[in-house]
Every structure is written in C-alpha cells, then in structure tokens.
Length: 480
Image 1 (cartoon, one colour):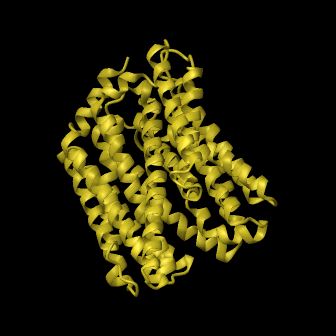
Image 2 (spheres, one colour):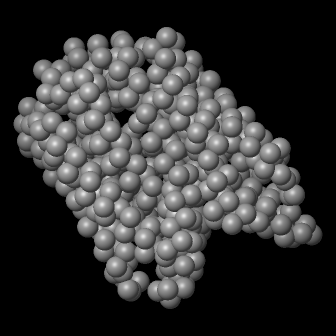
Image 3 (cartoon, helix red, strand yellow):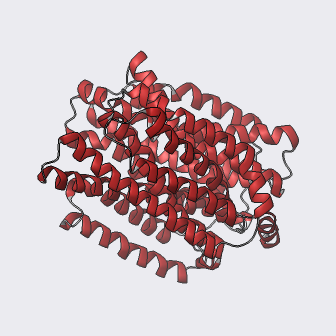
C-alpha cells in the first residue's frame, strides 16, 4: 500500500480515514447530552437508559481485537468499508427508532461497525506513511482526532438536541458516512492483505472476543451491580479464565490470532500499559469535569461543550504543530513524560476547583494544561505502540492499542465514578451540604486521575526506548 498512493493523494486518503474515525469517536459522547430527551421520548427508566450507552460500548470493546486481525487477513480497506457501512446503516436505524429494543439493538450494531473502523484505521494510516517525519506529523493529527473528538461530541450533541431533536445526533452520521464511503472508494488505495496466509484462528477469535465482551459488560455495570457483587466478580473471573484459554490456544495453534511473540516487543507492551492509565486519566477529566460544570456550576449542555472548546483548540495546535517535531527530535520518552505531566497538573487543578468557581480562574487553567498534555502525549503513545510492529501485523497492533485505550477508559471511569460517589456519600453522612459533598467526591476522583497520569509518565520514562526513525526502520526490517 505504501507505494500505491503518494504526495497530495496520500494526505487526501489520510483525511478520509480521520473523518471516518472522527465520526466513530464523536458517537461515544454525542449521545450523553441527549439521554434525558431519549428517556422521555421512548419511556426508558434509569436502568434501561444505561443500555443506550452500554450496548455501544459492549460491542465496540468486544470486537476491536478481532476487527484488527481480520483487517490483516482479508484487507484493511475492505474491513474499513464494511465497518463504515455497518455504522452508517445502524445510525440511520437509531435515528428512526421508535422503541427501546430497536434503539438498543441498533446501538449494538453501531458499536460493532465502530470497532471495525477504529481497529483498522490506525494501521491503514501507518501504511500510508512510512517516512518517519511524515508519519509523526500524521500521527499528531490522528491523535487529536482521537483525543479531541469526544469533547467535540458534547458540543455537537447539545447543538443538535437543542436545535432539532435527539434523532439528529444519529441521523447526522448518515450523510457523513455516505461521504466517507464515497471518498474511501475514490482515494484510499485498494490493496490485498499483507498476511502470508488467511487462516483465521477461530478458537482464539471466539475466546478473546467473548472474554472482552464479558469484561466490558462487568465494567460498565460495575457501579450499578456493585463491584464486589457475585455477578461482577463472576463475570470478571469468567473473562480472566477465557483469557487463559486464549493464551493456551495461541501458544499451540499454527496461525495464532495474536502471536505471543508480540509481547516481547517492549515498546508495544509499555505503550499499551501506559495507554490504559492515560485513558483512565483522560476519562476522569472529560466526564467528571463535565459533571462538575453541569451539576456544581449549573452549566447547560451547550455551555459545557463551549467550556471544552479552548482545550480542543490547544490540543489541536500541539497535536498538529508541535508533537511530531518533539517526537522526531527527542524520541518517545521525553514528549510522553512531559505531556502526561501537564495532564496530571491539569487534573490536580480540577481537584481543588471550588463550589462557586469561575470559568476563567477555576476551569480554564486546568483545561489549558490538559489540552497541552493531550496534544503532546498522544502522538508518542500511539507511535511507540505501532512503530515496532511488522506491516502484516499492524492491524492486530492497532486493535490491541485501541482495546487498551477503551478498556482503560471504561475501567478508569467506572472506578473513579464509584470513588467519587463513595466519597460524596461519606461527606453527606458527615453533614456536608449536597453540592459541597458532590464537589468533594469529584475532587477525590480528579486527584486519583492525576495519580494515573503520573504513574503512566513514570512507566514511560523508565521503560520506553527508541525514536520514531528507529521504530520505522525496525518495522521495515521485520517486513517479509
């Protein structure tokens, strides 16, 4: 694929990939603002309403790894087209939904399509750009799309819900999806699989996908079911047992779904561990700061979206303009540690945000530091995870890193939300006023999120090695 498209056409193809991924990323958060409207229109109760979000997360998290490997075996462009088609048709079904069951089912199909797109897009991008400087620049843009798309979704969700109706948060995907399909056929080069064979490890696929589905289900329902309940612990134990079965299969099968030798790639393993912690910290920022703005400071959904706008602009500037240069000059380690340090500082500022805070003094400084941190750190994390992997396994590596981010974010959000709720309950019992107790819970969760970012920075500083250029040479030398 590297030689099939050059110059301006390569960047046009990359733009198509970013547009497709942005549509997927937006959908993880655009729904949150419209949940009250969906509840009123379709008669959801509190328990069933959660499945509008959870059905998407379940299939999205469960099929990332398999989607990436299928791209390696059968062609990543083909899988990208299939994923966009599924996502677009499911979005149309969501927008036309008139019942709870229909909407939840369509959301599950949306998650499946989104998983396939997300799993192969990063590997397609890596194959478009093999020269280190261009790859680093492209990765910076891609990192901004992944990191900033969620907060853009809040703004867009508020705008569409207020101006039109909740149906349009889904229907807006239809013309965008159709455009991505047309542009993919026009600009993204057609190429066969890089794999030496097309044998699908069925046993490995079934066990690892089932394990991920069970783990995601346990995590997204952990707060409601109870983290030490029999159901949650049983699901996590079953997921862990299936992972053990999966590893046993991979050690014996002729053509494994996930070759265990990948775990000998130090940067790949380290970047994924860092990604889990980093995603947990980012989700703490995004979701808990949105709750702080809405429930403590009294912002409406549109104001919440606008409050994230400065962070998005700053993130874009650093992702596109600075992150690639820093990686090319200093390697992975220094930009990663610096970015995570800024993020931790931003979370610590939120951990002291007062009950009657102002945007200028109590919100904007933390948002600024987090925008800088995300803009700098995403590029080296993604590049460290992908650059040492041979081309025929880049889809699998993409699926692994996306799974790490998704699982880290979901688990981090669940744990930190639970921590915040527990702290709030203790403060209420101690006689604190409702809003003060709520804000106190958020402070503890933000502080824990800062701890996640600092641990990720420490691991990156100690364990990551190499530069973008050396990583590209490693991948090229490993190619058949």
